Image (cartoon, rainbow, N blue to C red; front, side, top):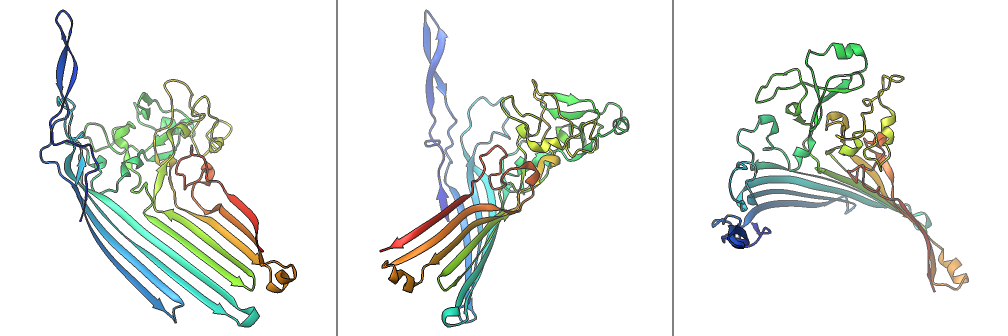
Length: 391
């Protein structure tokens, strides 16, 4: 069991602050109550269970490692800002109420061997690893009477970032628009809705407003769903392999993670996100009168209020990837040659990192899934070539 008290100090003690008060021939000083005291505040607690298994097979040529864990964290300190009405007349302290369960495992399997003999002997190895870890909110502060589809209980931390509308298709023709119900409107952003028009993106009408669970002929934020569970990768995996023969050796590392998804940044969900930004290239495949089969909807007007397309399944992607993370290649000059050159040794080597993605699901968006943000500076590949001389 571990404890954690990494929150604001002295929350068990009532505090006050000085401010300006009423004016009686001059401004007086007032005494203002600060954050309410929580006399019962205590540590967050985490109970951890771990189990491991190590084994060696086939004359120590194969090794297996496995680790499993389960962690129950409770009395998590947070403020009840969601379930307490905004009319409450004081600042709230942290309270011990939230609970999170986490579990996972990691497995690594490696094999090494030597074949041949004498000058033709080759040594090689291969190793692979896979890990899975997830969590779920067991107890959490939520507004009273929250609609069931918005509850985060039972979901992993961060799942709320997957909330969005379920995109159907672009309204490609006037016939598509005419087929919609009378009074149909489509949510664009917090500034309002739009009447359907050719080129606009349409969504699934799942439920109505104010607790109505049946479709109401309008697309609103009440039609949002959790489009995914994980915004942090629950899976990590990798493979390394290498070999050496005579004076030549190499090794390769593959690495990746998966099982998570991400929503495209809001400024990328419209043509020309801001005046100082150019339009992202994938918007070239958008609806236009000359190209009604474009993948993305028509360009909306840039200005104020901004008309970015809302978070939806069209802009929500699987971020699983595998990267060629590193390659190392080296060659040592033979000893008979180094002795003639009267040197201790000479090694020529090449080293490369982040050499490219073997697979990913966002190639058309043109950014790196490991960065998880289209506006982030991309991971750079590096190449190094050198000599190591020993006298």
